Image 1 (tube, rainbow, N blue to C red):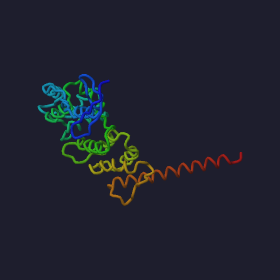
Image 2 (tube, helix red, strand yellow):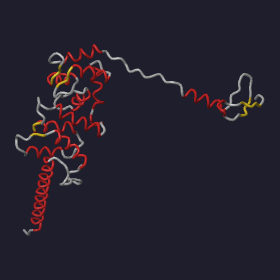
Image 3 (cartoon, one colour):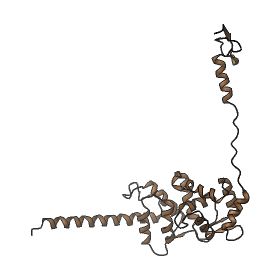
Length: 265
């Protein structure tokens, strides 16, 4: 070890005693200062991979039904090329949502190009590989509400502002997945309504909120004077009556069975 020398650190920090050796004299305080300097070094910004815009346009042309537009026929062909069932795979709706499709049942070329460029996708293989990450089951509540609302708006027919109950019957289980315990009984209730019954956007979105606030079929948390749409109030009333009738029937059957068992031969 060399002789002891006093080294004064920069920045006004007190000096420290260290051993000096030929060509080397570094204090602990100075080493800490060097560490801070290196940690503040600017990091190179991450540059996203480039995408082939021409290839993105070629993909659109592959499924477009007319210049600048892909209708549901083209969207269905795309789904089949991506090994999805266009009638049941929710990831197809999630893809249209990610592309920010504005009009019902169609995607225009600008939405397609901007959406795929944002997703960094420029080939059929990349598009198919991206599908698992589009599964809406992984969305948080806020994002899922946006997606659920989009599903209604995208599934409308023409200029209609409502959905026929037959469309709701097919669409609701796909869109909401396992986020609601009310899907099956609500659709059973809807089946019993008049044929002309249609569902509004407010009713559709309220069903998701209702499923969150009243999570079980015992309807705990439901308030009769709440601000739910009339359709949901009628659903609760009808389902409670159905449950009561079922419970009464089961009780009567159990009583009859018990009486039969006690009867003498």
